[in-house]
Structure formats: C-alpha cells, structure tokens
Length: 150
Image: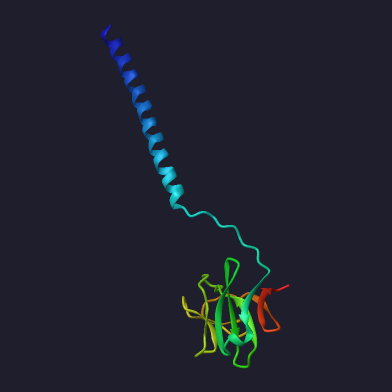
C-alpha cells in the first residue's frame, strides 16, 4: 500500500510542476512580448508623391548639388556650371548610402565605398552596379519642380 501512495504523490507532483512551469512561461511571455513590440519601430506606409517644389531657380547655385525629400526618399538635385539641372535618386545603387555632389571632382559621390557617378547619373567608378534612377526636372517660371520620370 505504501508503494501505491508514493506513485500517486509522484504523479501529483509532476502535474504540479507542469502547471507551474506553464504558468511561468505564460507570465514571461506576457512581459517579453509587449516589451519587444514597444521597442520595434512601427512600419511607415510609403508616401505617394508625384512632384515636389524645390525652390526658385535663382536660389540654386551653379555647380552645386542639394538633397531634397521626395516623399520618403532622398533625391539629389545637381546644377552644372553651365546651369543645367538634373535630378537623381540620392540612394547609391551599391549599399543604399546617401550620395552627395562633389564640386571639386565634378561628380556625384558615395562616401561609403568611393562610388562615383557622372552628371548623367551613370556609374563611372567604384562598386555601384548600375546608374542612379533619374527624376525629371521642370522649371515653371522661377519655380523648380522635381517629378517622377513618365
């Protein structure tokens, strides 16, 4: 009779261990999940933009470049020494770094791995695998607008 009672107590003890273990796991999950959800930034929807105003033509220096926001994406507006305006995606095609205009070299330059693009957005040096995506530049009166290529 003593053997049977020990087995019953052992079974009850195992059941109690499983119940307490499951409760502990559930409690930890109720703490960890909200913490992880709080620390993860929310996804932002893509902003659909067809064109943006950059400013007045007279305010944009010759032989210069400027980064402009086009929705959620950066765009680089470059004005040549002759006064021609070009706009490209400011995201390097190699590793998505932001490019800039280097007046001293006369190129669009990516500082991450020394990638270089010419005034037409074509990759001319470094690791970038393809040219920059081009945007259309429109001058209406004195206002400069950038829009997607059609």
